[in-house]
Every structure is written in C-alpha cells, then in structure tokens.
Image 1 (cartoon, rainbow, N blue to C red):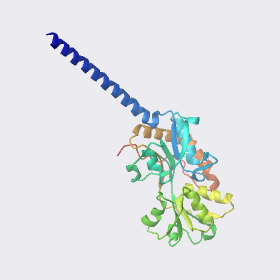
Image 2: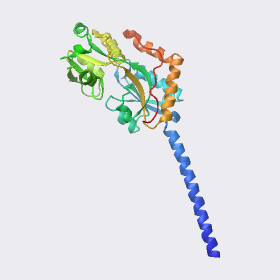
Image 3: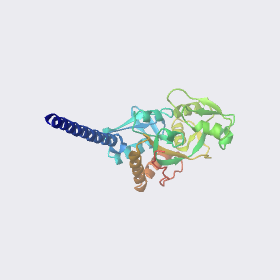
Image 4: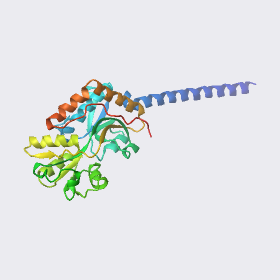
Length: 290
C-alpha cells in the first residue's frame, strides 16, 4: 500500500512538473513570437539604398532621400525613434537575403513588389507606385522617344534589379547590356551615362528624377524621356511570416497619406526634378502569407 501511494505521488509530481514546463514553454513561445514581429520591437534596423540620389543615398555616414524619410516615419509610427532606428545599406541583389537572415527588420529601398519576391519575403504597402522610364543624355533625346528607341543602345544593367530584364526580355527590346561593377548601382549608371560609356538608364521614375537632379548639379545635361511603360509598386519588405508587422506597417502608411505626410515628402524630393507625383494612397497588396 505504501509503495503504491509513493508511486502515485511521484506520478502526480511528474505530471505537475510536465504541465508547468509546457505552460512555461508556451508562454516563452508567445513572448518570442511577439518580440520577433516588427510591430513589437523596441529597436529597428532598416535596409535602405545608398546609390539613388533623392530616393536613398549616403554621404559621410548620413542617409538621405525619400525612402529614408518614409522609413523614419514608419518607424516612428511603430513607436521606434531616434537612436533606436538604425539604417543598413542594401542593394537590389542583397535585399531578400538580408531579410531572411534577420540582418534587417524592414527594407525600404525602391523595392518593387513582384510575385517572385513574394515567395521569399512579405511586403507591406505599396507606399508608392512608380513607373519605369528612360534617362538619356539631352543630346540623344530626339533619338530615344520611348523604350523601343533603346534597341541597339548600351543600357545600364544593375545586378538584382528587374529593370533591364523588363526592357530586354519582357518588352523584347534588343538593348545591349552595360554592366556596372561593385556596389554603386544606379550611381554608377549615371557616371557611365555622363561619361559616354553607356547610352541610357532605364528604371523607376523616382530614381531617374533623383539621378537627373544630381546630373544637373554636376553640370551635365540629361533628360527623362517621359514615356512610362510599367507600374512599380514600392513595398516595404519584411519577414515572410510577420503578418502582424505587415498590418502595422500598412496602418502607418495609410496614416501618412491621410495626414499629408507622404504627399509632403513626395513634393520635397521630386518637385525640383519636375516629376509629377501621385499623392493618393495606393491600393495595398494584402498581408497574407501565401
């Protein structure tokens, strides 16, 4: 009888211990899940471009541009400000990997939402819908009136960007690829254009507006063809399973349009280049994990 009582007692104690462990693990799991969402973080690392004047650039350790301002404002609306917001450089080639590896929490980097990219990461937004266009030297503007005028031309190609494939593969225009090296991206495209090493740059009109403004400051004459041929919904990239974070960022973007913050930033960065911007909130893509 005593042995059976002791056995029952030990079993009861073991059951209580197991239940307690399970509850503790469940509690930790919930906490971890909450902490891993960008909606609940006290600090944020945000990936931005460094090679796109007016959109995302870096000089002397200082990041500036429309995307940088958007990123700062989204973070503020998520409750993260000041030194708790850190920026990290990304390129067209590295964005998905940095999100998936947890090196950045968000990417705000002229990051067009595409079905292929949605296989790897989630997107909030878009926060703006840009349009692919063409930038040429002013002396060549009469010869390139639209994307089809790029046939046979040396067109800048940036690794990881969909802009060149859209012209060459999707539009069927036989442009000649002019690859840029290193991490300079579209800044190197502008250098090549003004130095006559390539004939044209084709990418989103916001990026082209920033490049055109920089060229003007440097004394070069370039021109946006102003014949857009695609829609480029700029999304904010984040971890694929962070639905709560995606919805929180969408709420922040909506608020920025409703209170005039997003239109103000668009005018601030792109009015000087003469680009006509759209100031109404774009149609969101949705935050499901599919």
